[in-house]
Length: 523
Image 1: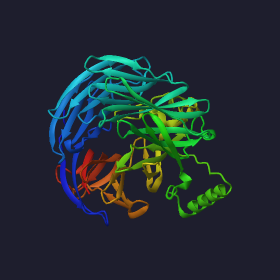
Image 2 (image 1 turned 45 degrees about the vertical axis):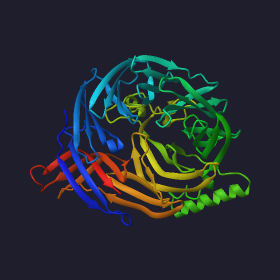
Image 3 (image 1 turned 180 degrees about the vertical axis):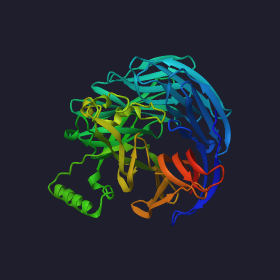
Image 4 (image 1 turned 90 degrees about the vertical axis):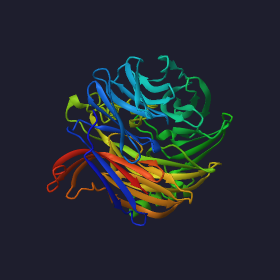
């Protein structure tokens, strides 16, 4: 059942030279450390909170844009199924419940307007490890692997007919991502395909029925390998693919080494050009380093370029969706690395629940199988069998602007203050104004950091603002998880889990409390 809201407060803070922000905050109590919520922002339609209070139950609550609760729904699922993930297609929210490597999935379609749910049960394949889950209308797409072989599944929820879509492409391949194009009503699936020692990107677009709409094959130059790519459909004939590339001989079984970004223009499913932009040519890629490190890096780059070559780099990047602004295309990528700690107990290795990083995708204990921990095109993940995954560490994010001919116009960056997460997901948010200013925002430990740039110029850099609870005497002892996401208009939504103490509050706030908070922030 729905938890009571225990706090409602309105506050005003300042981001230095930024305009004042109004913050509205609500808190929901967490009686035990095992309870959690999943937050799904719905833009101007509000926000959804998902929880799993019991082994065979779930709760969904919808709040409006003023964080007032509109409705709450309690539902039941089969025993011992865990919440895995959710997806929002602009009309409805779909919840996915399953067990690790189970063939049984329950899908709950939440109709967010009137507030009712539809439940579907489907049977897929034995030992199916899901990596992605998206919906378009009543068409459901799931990507995953069975014994390391890529599988793409489509289910028509109106008939519960499930079929395995063909993934046969010459060469070994891995499904990297499924993306929803609500404008053109298409589902875009990206495949990394390895032929000998080189990786190319194959992007297939499907109708919501699962029927193939188009296929694009993008091949790198001889010395390179593509690592990932995102397809942007501009119109019926023109598409763009932007992603990361690396030197072919720098890739290994447990590492995908990025050298830079590439942009490919495709007309009538034929490649017109591919442009490569090494990070050594960026103006701000290495600004996360201190001055001494930057100077040393610049000397190494210059020495290589004077000799007619390029300094080879080894970075991992999480690439965001492309942001189109007129005839320009802005891409944000976050640089990260997985961190491990020594395994002193043979029972707690990669094959155990606690040592398996692919099970950390959800706050409820289960989650998506995570393909970013190793390079799926170069071998298995067995190299980490004596270590325990300890989270993803984010170092910085880069933002790059390209014109329609693939030319790099400008680049900039924002440094992370040792942001770490058990789940690999986008941490930085980007908003582009009509005046050409770009705002980058991320959260850490319940505080918000913002940076405003105009092309490669910094207008307002690195302002960090704590988000107070609004109750006098409150002290936040620990922020376990926190996120921030652009919501609508000038508003952002921040949320997370906190432990708060207040020795001198009133009857309602005195003492200790564990809460899940939602903060509405107005820029």
